[in-house]
Image 1 (tube, helix red, strand yellow):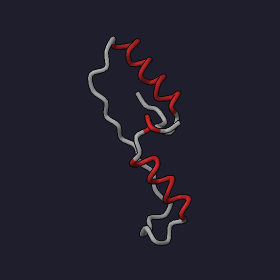
Image 2 (image 1 turned 90 degrees about the horizontal axis):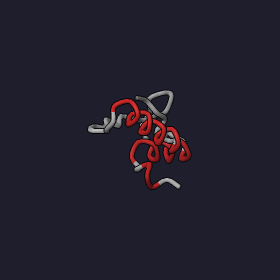
Image 3 (image 1 turned 180 degrees about the vertical axis):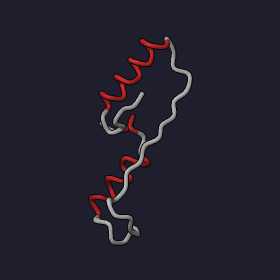
Image 4 (image 1 turned 60 degrees about the vertical axis):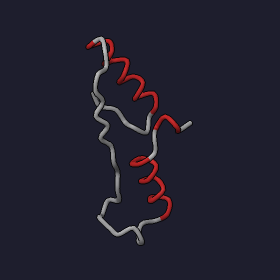
Length: 65
């Protein structure tokens, strides 16, 4: 089951689909990350992109409104 980790509804739908198909949810492998298109050190990355990378890669989606 795959879902966009920045889309709360997609995550809820993935859980619901899993429960419908298998009856329970025993393991979750959350593998999500983004980065700049061209690999770069942190310094040359625009602040807005850096904040988006941190938001997606490190923050708990449950805390996002």
